[in-house]
Image 1: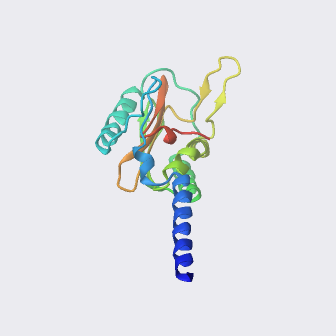
Image 2: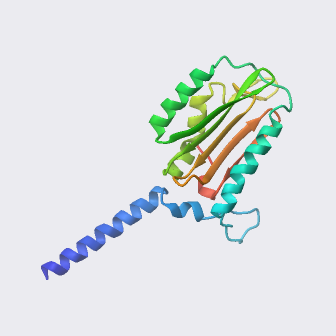
Length: 191
């Protein structure tokens, strides 16, 4: 009887641990839970690894082709070194690894291009806006007259990859637009 109760306790503890881990959203299954379309009652479409890798090629190409478009905002006083320092602090604080940083020159200004890696998918997605605000001091500032948003840079690109190097979240902006891409609904940036 004691052995049966002990086994039941182990099984219950394992179940609780599995539920807690699943609730954290950092299990690989979140990468395959899909993106909903605009139609109701249609199941989310799963983004395969191959499709995510393709997005990791096409979105940066589109971003690069649009960097020179539109009018530029205020010129940033943030140097490359300052940006790298902010990025290193954010990586330490939010638990990701910086895989690549480039600065794309456009019309006398720099546009950061950043690729990071983490196995904390949902946590990263929820903190993306906070991370960007820590990297770009003007993010979310708005001109009171025109309503235009300010950025410290003429463009900003951030790609988050899983531990296998497959993109799961991309955020980009450029003078005339920008956007977000994610492998599942839960991974679209918030916060």
